[in-house]
Image (cartoon, rainbow, N blue to C red; front, side, top):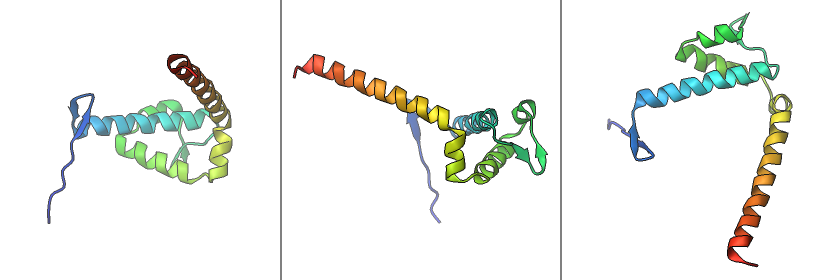
Length: 110
């Protein structure tokens, strides 16, 4: 069987697997904390986790708990959790799109 290899180059720097795994771990932690702030219950098995307990999870535990937590919510429930953030994001995108259009028009004429 052939061995598959991949290179990840970001800003002209080759990123190693350990760097990518660290980013994934930090992202999973961020998602758990954000979901908890928005009202989701973060559990390890039957135990509800505090922010401090989330911070001490290993990368493997964090990934497992993050996946399990997200699977407990339907799409509509996730939208409800993130409603305020999604509204803010939409407003920001609209403002930035409008600014971008104005900048484009002012640089390129009518």
